[in-house]
Length: 377
Image (tube, rainbow, N blue to C red; front, side, top):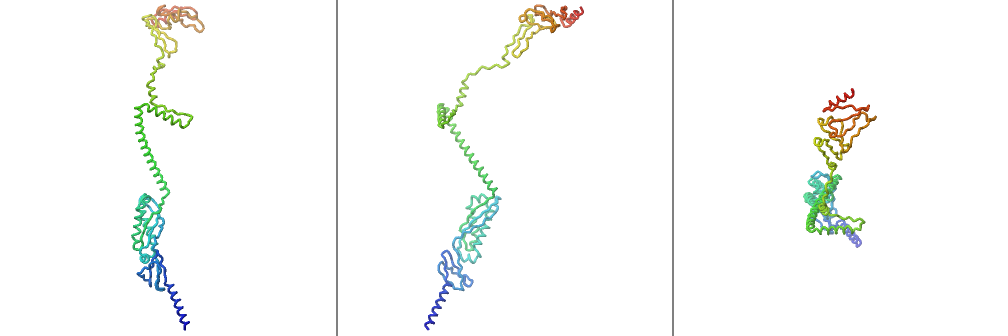
């Protein structure tokens, strides 16, 4: 009897222990428990810790209340300024209503992920490339609002949304690099021009001071020499003031003008006319005239036919008859000046040594007649 009672007690204890083990549940601190009894959700949400359900009747569903980090796959789209980009983001959310997160949506994680992808595409199409690169805070807030609006009914709260990376095509990267380089060069030129303007003002002030005090320019020159000599160079470059060169140029005497080739010849000596002195006027040649001097004969009416060129009596001397020869036969001999012999008095010697008479005549016709008579005689 006692043994049977002891056996029953032991069996009851074992049954209770098995029941307790089947009914006992542990909810962690970051979780909440939902109890479904015969498929119906109980209103009571089990807090963290030890809890008991009815085995075979109740079913406990644990919901994580931690903040979930959900990466959004990279989405490719075209911005408002027609630039193709690939943008990926990350979403931070948590469950604030376990009942709605389990009952209202089948898989709240997948729902949030899809909603984040569609919202990211919409943000890409509504934004410019510059906004995606430099104004991400505003885009993050807009993206958070777009995802949070439908997620409120799912018992999910969007904590934060961040655009993680923006990928650009290689051609666009090169274009942006050239643009940035051109902008940097423009700014450098503006800064350089501003510096030159300020330096020019200072140099103008310094030049005004040096013009008032000429010794300042000499002191500046000596300072330059000291600066150059400090380099220990074998060659010393000494700057020379341009003002000093201009002063020396003004102080130098002006040299007399150098005559040209035209003015080197002495003035021609003009002799008296034939009518006044009885001899032709000799014109002395200049430097450019290298031929023999020529004498100007008087007119044909006064002196006879101009057959021979009569030289001056002073230069030639007394007239000499040229003896006939093989080379000089038939050539007329040079006679003295017209003032000694008379007008048109010329003596010629023929090849046979005779001297034919020449009749004086005023014109060329008389000369031809006398030579014809001589030949006939």
